Length: 181
Image (cartoon, rainbow, N blue to C red; front, side, top):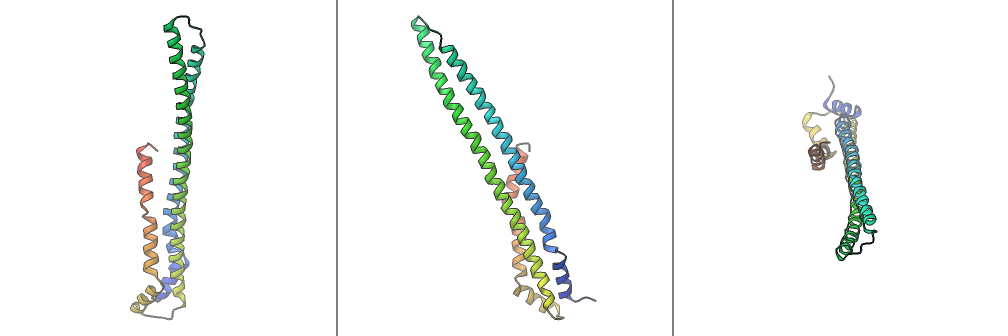
């Protein structure tokens, strides 16, 4: 019958920690990709609005080129010019907003990739600690617990659990679901 330390070392060699982390890490990477797609689509929608506002500004400029003789006509032309200027400013703001949406999506995606990397590293650390148990001689369960503490196995497992439960994962998933993504 294998000893406790042989079982722990075997668990580390087969990647018990990294196997558990792989799914969570892949999920975080998948969320990062979905965030990029969503932010690109949203930015494209905002740019569509900017284009529509730009077209309206262009139409105001064309309509304002008519030489009005009456006082009312000149006032109308002045109003069209003011509306055209306002529309051009709004177009610029919308274009800047679209860029900010794209950049914000990249920032969130990069953070999710960092979470995925942390999950993977924590899983690998658990594996390394378990595999390190192979150097122990045949020991009983009480001694194993002491060696596990010295190897920081509970803390490493806690770090893995914490990384897998990063609140950013749930918040982004909820936000994307709420947006229909």
